[in-house]
Length: 234
Picture 1 (cartoon, rainbow, N blue to C red):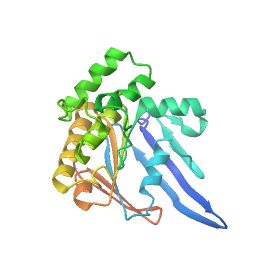
Picture 2 (cartoon, rainbow, N blue to C red):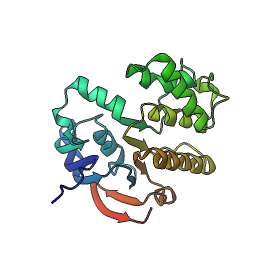
Picture 3 (cartoon, helix red, strand yellow):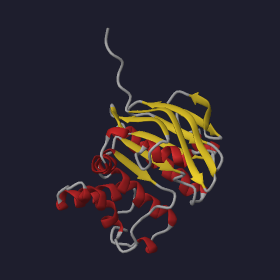
């Protein structure tokens, strides 16, 4: 009998709590989630449901209070701090609602930064960065600083930056939350196309039902627990 294919990402019994003085705040309470390579999952839930916290745990930005997160068959709890940083840099692409672009760097420099941290050769990183910026429609804005770009353009830079190391997993936290509806749809179109082209696993946190409906699989978080999961044909 053949062994089942190992999932790219597996979260098992995830709990996350924070101490607020004498009070314990339970943000996640026993979350189980499994993703195959190439999956596209939308995480829905109201503000405070635990969507961002779960994304941070899945990407190794934080550690669960209890439970395990496995990526590529390896338990993140077994990584050293250095190995965890390298894993995040090479295997995971983060797209944040706040963009987090460095203001002193232009668009190309922001996109190339993760590649240079991964010790990619400067010429290769620049070529890859230019290719991605052209792919997201910003070939004419390469030398512009973040303050010279619109919100939608900054988000496109952030997407290109997340993809420059060809990550296996892309985690997008409310990627259209600061954008108008038309620009938001363009961003989702772009993410969907890139995911299909590169067989990237995409997890997108959103409170928007219309955006969530673009994903073949929707997971609803309520009060730190998965309340429902819906799967549709891709």
